[in-house]
Image (cartoon, rainbow, N blue to C red; front, side, top):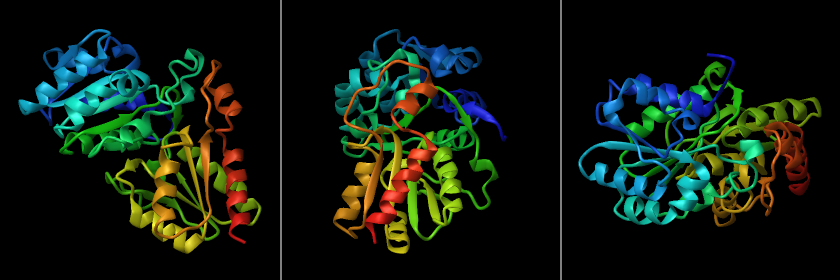
Length: 315
């Protein structure tokens, strides 16, 4: 499966591939099927697809009702609408009664590109983490996304799944010993000097950063933390003990997301230097995905620089 594919495209493929196996799966979309890539499911299973129009709050309520009838709804729209516009409905209609709905936010982060700050949702992890009992998942590539979709179909309870717009390199299918399990991070590469904990499209960049650091004599461990909540605390604690410092990297604000989760946990358990890499306390801006990622420092070189800082802090 090596190559490049957007996680949103892999998500759409997974829905179609898994539909026969899971007849209770239903898909709801807010007039964005061509963007969220649910159009394939709509064509193949029209009786199980519901276009709710540009009415995200209503879509969320409909999905909650379907869940009470024993179905497994996946709601689909852009992350900014799924977690921002429909936050109250997700919180009160899905989270509070702990219903079996997966909220899917496509086009997360600044790599949405030209759509600009209004559509570049960099707060979704933080918003969903705050809802009691809500699982938060952000797969790093197409291979991992397909595994995550099946795992979420079988998951009992409310969940949030983030998809990315641009095509990204597939790496997890070629890593020896890789296994996907919700709530458990995956060690993609070992190291002894610093641990880089990454999520989403930053995972391949973290692996590139590791190569940069290796040439400098710095041994970096890389953890793919696809499930941000609940955090794999045991894996984080082990990394902190064995490498002595942590870098988190995410296409999200440094406030409230993966970095916040790791820092919050270690502050009360095993305080070690934690450098949070992501978007600082500012809005996004319009530009190509590559240009915007570069502008906000979401690159392998910037991850490597954060790692150098973390190593220096532990001395």
